[in-house]
Image 1 (cartoon, helix red, strand yellow):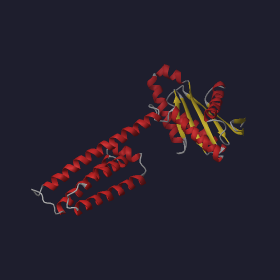
Image 2 (spheres, helix red, strand yellow; image 1 turned 60 degrees about the vertical axis):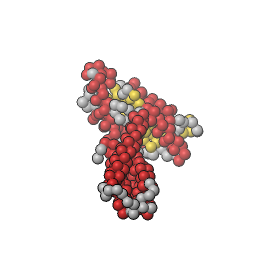
Image 3 (cartoon, rainbow, N blue to C red; image 1 turned 135 degrees about the horizontal axis):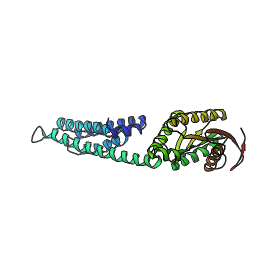
Image 4 (tube, one colour; image 1 turned 90 degrees about the vertical axis):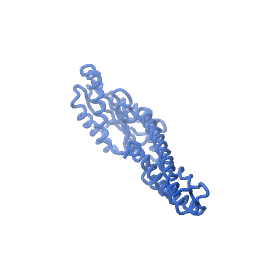
Length: 296
């Protein structure tokens, strides 16, 4: 499978791809019937380029080219079985080949355009070095989750992570070592979280995790798993370690930036106490846009 087809298939729901194929094949069959019924006098079959473009947009270049082949077979068969007379028997086959090349080219361009658009969207919302969500995308996800928490009363937690002595690593081993450490942390964190959690690199050596619909005990376990994952990821990059603050909310209190600031404050307390550790605290809302912090 080509990179384009693989990328679009990975980003397209299977049901949508199947529906596009069903409608596309049905349209091709209907156009073939019309061309045969009208003795190839009308150019209804030229409209096959539309379902080809749709299938290529949804499923990728390979799907579009396969449907282009079916459309070419339809065109050739309709011309062959119609009553229309041609000056030579091979003309319907040349016409079919011409339509295949044209439709396949359209399928290629359509799939390429969607791939470029999807990749541009992914670049705009993800950190280039680690592949994690960037700051803007994380805050958008956080705002949405906070609103959902307030509406349905679901608990959630926010973790703020900062690497200790990261500058010393860069100064002693170079920025390439620092980049490898950041990638290692991203990979380790990604493997330690639930599929519903959102992980981001906020910038520099700062990371954040959004843990929706999670109990306090589960958030505590998640914080410990995050700490263990970061310790393992940084094992080969001394003297770097991690400080982690986890703020757990019975339901969303205030706006999301304030919730992240609460986790940041917990992380800073660890920095002040000597670095390298994890701290979690409860935050129970007293009134709209206000919160009360309770010690663990």
